[in-house]
Image 1 (spheres, rainbow, N blue to C red):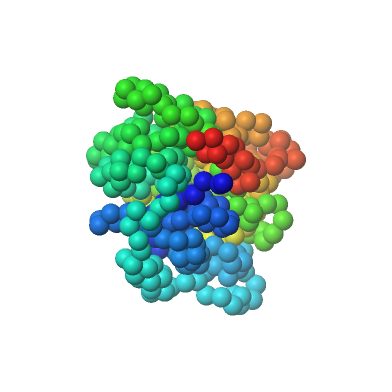
Image 2 (cartoon, helix red, strand yellow):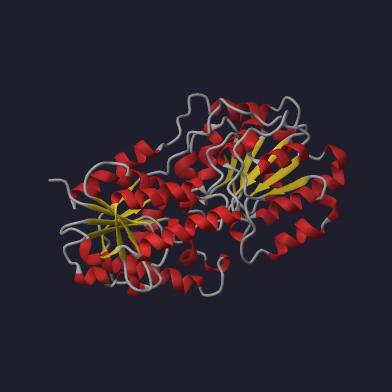
Length: 423
């Protein structure tokens, strides 16, 4: 008989304040649909201040799909108002009126969240979870509150598997908010206490997780590695944003570890030398924490204002259209747990220049150009050479993508489910 599966929905039901999902949100959604979208004993678990609540498969799946409907994800690029504004800024208008199907408003997202909360309050206690269940937690949410997981001491029949996305707050505390290193260490202690298995997005993350737990005096449990799947929207076919100038893209929350500051200083130097011929730089992502120097450049540096475009809330199809029409992706991060924009760009046929860090080598070997994240001269040379008309460097990078097959969620689950089934 197949073991009952319970998926932790807590993060998903808290994410409706954002119009578009983050990378971890997409992992949560993929796992939720994988667990709840198949027949059998399937349940949703939500952590509350009054203890965990258990939802049957139908109610849990309804909440998942309601949350997904609140994100601007599945519509055509042309229906995304953020994409339309970006196209106008880059000198490529979107013909005609936007297709029907307006983006969900903040009010409608709040209504969805209210209905979900009401359902959760009426849900059963953890005692309703069948004996011998497997509990899956695919985000880091609430792991820094170990009391929220004390129920696992009472339910020794339940085996738990946790997904670890990165160790960055511990390995690179200088890039996080104050106190984040301590909070992440608490998350890893929670994992160490309860995990019968750990799932990781990369071999680099798995290695760092195992080493950290061992230093903490914990014998690491079995681990499985599954590269994150690229959404079907990313591919060479589809809407293509026609850029009037060479256009470089950088994706990710605007924060110090992403190394935006290096690129902004390079663009200032380019603008002072090239004037109107300066390439465009598009920063895709919301503003994050400890980013005052980056924000100062964006808001107060007049030299780059005409050449750097900041865009937040872009839909998946809008980002895919931008990638299909851009010149190259730049990924100069100091640290990453995975680096999903690299494989999304590669799937879209967009050449990639990335920082030379282990996880980028793991997912981008064979098609990326790698540069030290401190090598300003090297990044400047790469931008100038790739932006040049009939660029040989860009053509060589594009050829490396011929025949590239990005990781997908089918492959991800094929990599991690044998471990889960063995527990």
